[in-house]
Image 1: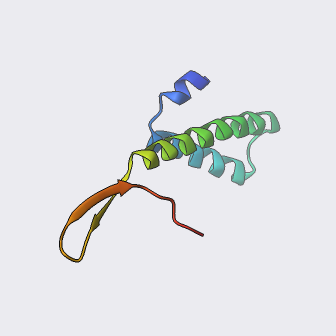
Image 2: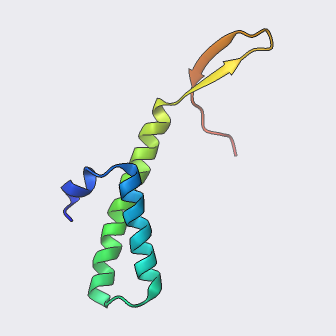
Length: 81
């Protein structure tokens, strides 16, 4: 699968393919050359998933309701560690 085709995948499709590659690699029944190619594809899929998650996070707004019942919307903020 070319990188252009990978970019067309939905988040869920990319994640499923990534999970399949991980299972295949963990099984240990894959030839070395195939394992290297699968790993390279997995890196691309992982990056795609991360980018899609970041994009979604930027779109999320936090809805807050005050004790008085007033509704306000603010930008999503990452939780503090």
